[in-house]
Image 1: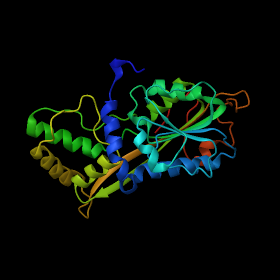
Image 2: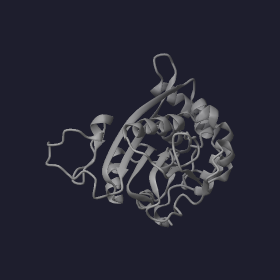
Image 3: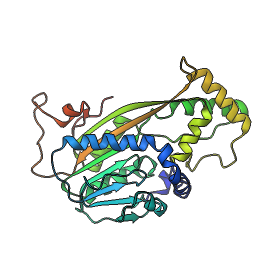
Length: 297
């Protein structure tokens, strides 16, 4: 279980948010679906069969005709009827109930960013893979919703004289590269893409976040209802600071993609610097993290 000293997310609150959002995901889960498609496009480059597959999070459906032996894990069983996945695992996402060497592939479309003990979770996932098994993940990165974070901080200081966290802290690429190394993944590759979504006004953005299950689930969040004056001032500041030329508001989402293998003796050995000719990172146009290097942005 996660150390209480590093708890950031209220898992009970998160569960409530995901359950509430479930029936609305068809209209609001576009970012999760896009991340899934990006992961599958990366998987297409890897020419091998995966017989046992685990999907972390069931807010988007994988094609069971293309992926064999699929199991899905989530913190809420209300998700199960939506995607009709009979092989569903309900569990605490902080402590995964798996034996070692169980899966050929673990894939996670926008699920891991709400786990309190991310280093521990990555180690558990690596252990759950069979030797030479593959881990693929999309996770929200540090640039995500920086506009919303900025305007709500400014507005709250103006209106109340204080500030409480309203947007979750997200890891950046160098941090994720280090965590992949720390977990023991071999040949890790880390890259990111920026997705910009535009809105008529702030409240449409908030509506999308609510119904994709990405509301404020921070333990240190303000427990009082949102102050109307605070929200209106946030909307004004968003319009002033982050409106496009056509008046629409931009919202930035950074999606960090992670690829790593459980070590196996058959895998590529480290080469002399500069001697490699063909790498997966080249095919993906991404940043590859070696055991001796840090991620670059």
